[in-house]
Length: 602
Image 1 (cartoon, rainbow, N blue to C red):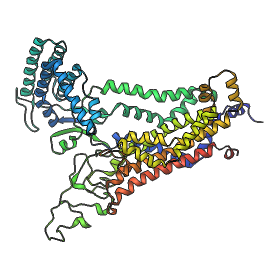
Image 2 (image 1 turned 60 degrees about the horizontal axis):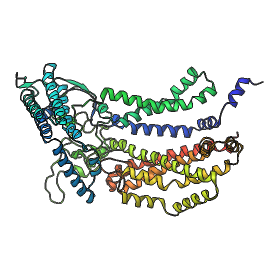
Image 3 (image 1 turned 180 degrees about the horizontal axis):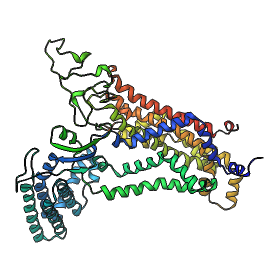
């Protein structure tokens, strides 16, 4: 005789418990889903995987300090000039920028809208731009100076603040007085706080010795949304562990309590990253790293910066970092990639030291190995080779995953939302509502979707946002037909009739009672839609209508060269697209099988 507790456990399983149980029995689905989770993790954590900035830097940066120190007086002069011009000066500047913007807009000049959106719109904002520029330079200097010099920098910052207050109050006399004070202090900073060059001793009253500081350039450069998704994905990756522990320890293994806590867990996964973003803002929000985004490796290579301790990412190349000495270099694990000390390939056409046509000697270009990079012929230097500008293909594929995967996912969310809403309305109400929506679906299906997307993107301009919108707007019809069919099947069921009899509104009946029971086919369609979105983005980028350089996507990487001699440029990004699409299709087939009651009877 069976244990009654076992019977209750079986009876307490709901529809989705059974579906998840079926999916757990399919190794192909588990492996495919795990690989997709890994791909998304790679894309989300791209700054920590491939970056020309170090994860940790402790040392001094002479070039950055010197640049900030030399421009202090110029920043102070700009702030004083704006303060003296007052509201009238801002109005004249604003009118001039508007007229310039109209000219740019008429000529369709790129990036004008984005630039104008961030431009100051008031006199206070106008002043804050230069005040922020001055404070940033003071902060860069403060990081590498001893406490004995902080007083002068603090006085300079305070004088800038007093000048800003006087300018906003339109106090002309105070503006003149504070401008003179600020100018004198900025001049003193420039004349007395020059950095002593490496290997030289500081001269009292003329130069100062830089002090090592510790910073985390990659972390400090992350945006809010990057922090959010990193924490979010860590929670997703840890789901099997923390969810199991919570179900057993906190909820005692009670299925009814576990089911009741599903929404709370979902809310926690969504909201906890927000707290992480707020915490990061408190710690690093005001931090201004001394390190320059594009010059640190060169500064360390050229001894313009000194490192006491430095740690780079696993791939120490930037997303768009150029190295003209390694143009079209094959993967460095291949024998054909080996280059000698003089810059000639050890075999193949690149090994020729004399031009075969003219007989003129050819000069080799030795490979430039920057600080933190693997040695010239190390197998791990360029695992997937380089492109026409010497950029590392693997690094660009890691960053390109962000574009390709996000386009597929976000466009799918959009098309599923549109299709679900319209399909629900058509299937639930029927009659003339169903007739109108069905005719709209048929009109959209009359045209080839890819060419419609191509036309829209060509007119709206090549951008990832436009691709996402175009895919979502033109590919919702399949989901709408699926949802409509499910609603027609379910709307006469007893639970729907009971909901209407109890006086529930149509919206509540549709989205609270009917839709959850119609989501099975939608989930299957969604997995295939993501794969289709990735393929569409890759095709558009290949044709030049996708992401614009230097930002990479898997599709745009394929266009770097169509010469079969440089096979690695087509093979590796193409394999990434192929494998991702296959993984999504395998997950989709597994979900379809798990949702099919005929396959679950056994």
